[in-house]
Image 1 (cartoon, rainbow, N blue to C red):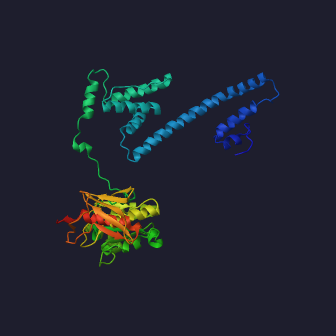
Image 2: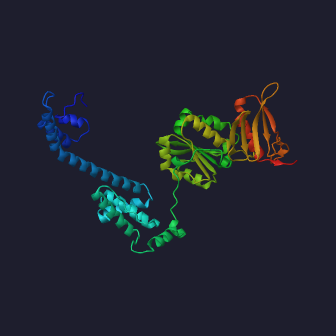
Image 3: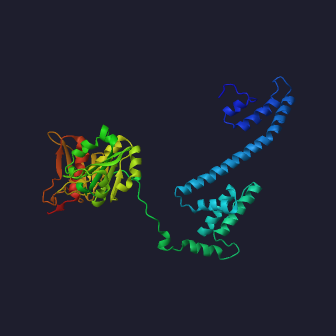
Length: 412
C-alpha cells in the first residue's frame, strides 16, 4: 500500500486489491488518457474523462461478469458444503439437481428449488418477478420447471387440493426413521442440578491432563471432600496419548489400556462428566467409542468460574451409601428479606440474624408454616430451623435442606 496513489501505475491498483490483469488494463487506460491539468479548459477536462470512461467500459463490463461468475460459483460451493455436512433441506438438493440435470445457473437453479418446494408443500404456484426482463424470464423458467418436477399440474383445477392433501397426510413410520447418531462429547451439555442423583459407584469422571497437572479448576480438591467419592471411576485424557484409567472404583486397581473399553462397557454407569480443554476434547471425540452411553452425559465449559460452579452441581448429585436426598432444579430468588429457594412443596429462606450471632435458615412446607414432623428414610428427624455462622454458606446449606426435605416422610 502506497501513500500516493498513481492510477497509471498497475502496482497501485494491485495494492488496493485489484487482480493483475485488471490492474494492467486500468493503468493502461490512465496512461493513454491522463487527467488534464487543473488550468485546462473545463470542456477539455470533461472530454478527457469521457474518453477514459469509454475506453474502460468493456473492462468494467468484464469485471462485472467475472464478479457475477464468482458469486454463482461461491453459492453452489456453499450448497455442496452444507449437503456434505448433513443438511436435510430439500431445496439444497433441488438446487444442485437444477444445475446438473437442467444446466441452470444460480438464479434459475434457486428459483427451480423454490418451485420444487412449493409443489411438494402443496402451495399455489407463485413465479418470481423482477424489473430486469432477462433475469425475470430466466428465473420464471426455472421456477416453472421446478414446480412441474415437484408434482405440480397447473392445468388441473384440483391440483392445489391434491398436493395439499398429500403434503399433510401422515407418512409411514418407516419413512420418518433416521439412523441414530452418538452425540460427540464436545457437544454434551453443561452440568446442572436437574438430572437425578446417582450413586458414586455409577459415576465416571474424565478430566484432562492439563487440569491434573495445574489444578486450575481445583477438581481434585473439591472431589476429595465428597463422602463416597472413592467409589467413582476416574479417567485421564491426554491430547497425545489418549484415555487411561486412574481409578476404576473403590478397592480396585486401575485397568490397563487394553481392558479399559471392556471394563467401562461392562459396568452400569449412570452419568459421565468431562472436564477438558479444546485439544483434549478433540481427542475424546476421536476415542468416544471407549466411553459407555449413560443416562446423563455432560461436560464443563466457558470460564474457570463457570466450570467450578458446573462441577459443584455435578458433585452435589453424587449419592454416598446410606444417603437419601431429592434431585431436581432448585428455583432461587432474591427477595427483599434475603435469599430463598424452592424445591417441590418446600421453601428455604434466610430468616434474619440469630442471637447472639449467626444467621437463621428456615424451611417451610406448602402451608407456609415451618416444616415440622419430617424424617429421613432412616428415621432421623429433620429440623426446619438451623443457625449458620457464615452467611456465604447460606445457599449451599439451603440446597442441602431442601433436598433432604423433598425426600423425607412426614409422621405427624
